[in-house]
Length: 290
Image 1: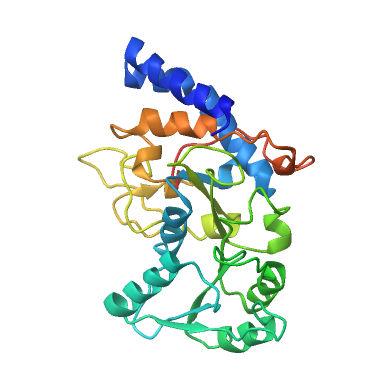
Image 2: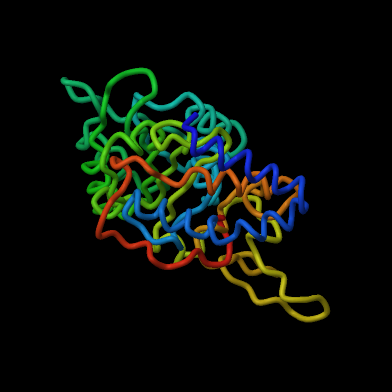
């Protein structure tokens, strides 16, 4: 663990011991807000599109849970997926009757965009998902080419970028993805227990939200009167930005202060992760994906 990260973590714990967890969390809020902006710059997005979660797998599952799958719906993926993602697909097959199909590889390796196009043209395709850099090899899949196919077919696109962020240039605009999940503990040199999820404006405007929300991910305007509905939540209103997808530990439960201190510690310092001229000057807005 880099020394600046260790110092940030221990300093926050010492501050908690001195003044209390919630007080230390409030004190750290400016640094946490800046973290959303800096993470946005890493992937070429605005702070409003970034959610802080425990790890890349949680971010990936939060994105998948935003879809109301029905029996016979289809997910198109590749033959080089991360095992946790495959377990998610198996669970969806058992619980919701969702079919997962895998595109062919090119002769030289990596997914064949033409095969993705053929499979994703199916009328029941709800999602295209790809592991950009699989964890068990040096393969780098053509995420941008798959994004082009998904955009043409108007099918949402999810990228697991756990092994890519911090190693490869990442521009969500060029990738044309709707979701991108990654971790802070690998090539961003952050601590364990912190990851992030990018959510596109298109998905936010559609009202996408994860399966399970809490009081930090949706507003309950008050009792005794009808509640405004947004995003299909009925009597609640999902908050409008990507922070509605954040995990509870990154929001406001009893673990939030420590989780948010990890968020402050993950601020990228490595030149490979700094991207100039990107959006991201906007402060983080009220949490929704978180």
